[in-house]
Amino acid sequence: VTDTATIPVIGGILPETRAYNVFMLEVHPVIEVEEMILLDNGPIEAEFDTATTTCFFSQFIGTPGKAIRGINSSLNIMDSFPDMIAMGTIGVSSNTGEIYLSTDYGAGWTEDVTVFSVNTGSILYSIDIPSLYGNPGSGPVDFAVHQDSQEVWTSLYFESQVAYFPADTINPDIGRINVGDPVSDPAGPTTIYIYQPTYKVFVASELKSEITIIDGYSHTIIGTIELATPLVSPVPPAPATPGMALIYDLDRLYVTTLLDGKLDFYNVSTAEFEGTIQLSTGLHMILGIVYDPVSEHLFVTGQTADPYKGLVYVIDPVENLVLYEAETSRFNPGFPAIDITNRRLFVPDAIGYVDIFKIN
Image (cartoon, rainbow, N blue to C red; front, side, top):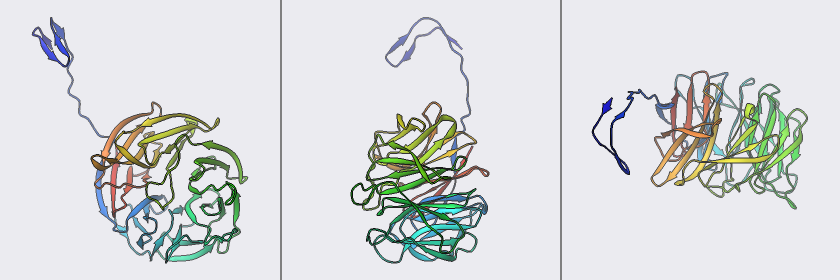
């Protein structure tokens, strides 16, 4: 297009003759809402089970109701899980068909781990992890399962420890690793993230604002990352449970900062802070994160304060740029999960809904 007229632009006028190339582009969003489903148990965390192609959701910590519910690949709701209070987030073993969750029928932290069947929703058995320090309970918070070895890990908040035990085992031998000392150096471990290919276990500690790196095969601590942003719970007295995602090829660990609208990232080999992605100055809560190895994108859930709404950020981890923002149907998104095969992103909301996004 050639235009010899003056063209008004922001900040002035373009005189003289200018030639322009004009293209009409059809823009496809990186993710788009496929369906919204009401679960009504206040889901806060999602875990996807590849064996049953079902996404399971744990309820908001300490809220009475269905401790776990699920949505299968046909988007039908599984609703056979018993009424109880969830005291943490879940871990799923795809090989044994078990779900692990810290539960309680009353108030206060617990030492009980309830094991559910992913197929029937029934309780299979329970595991007792008592306090070694006279606490009211050891306080299991989060669970993660290494699928190849079928080893289950849980963070023991009151003990300043992480525990591990074999899946599909009644009365298992329970190993413990100290990430602090409950008296002299309390750690308050919360989130556990396992990088499956190398079996590295990452444990976030609220009270020390650091991440402990454990070699899962030898059960030994191999490193510590001091967090650049202190961990502060957005909903006390519930503990601060940051989301974590490792991109192995970049040797980079991403950690959500929970309260100040940022996503921090660290070099794993050097344990050094590398930088921050500022998502928005209006964001007051950044919770969950998941990595999609197919699109090579990060999906981060957050919540804005003004206006009050929930968002999913799509991030290019190579350039550390936000590519796209998708608004959730409600305003309190939790920890997401991804169905890599069927290209779906499940985003729970603490007031009872799950948004299902199609990943393009």
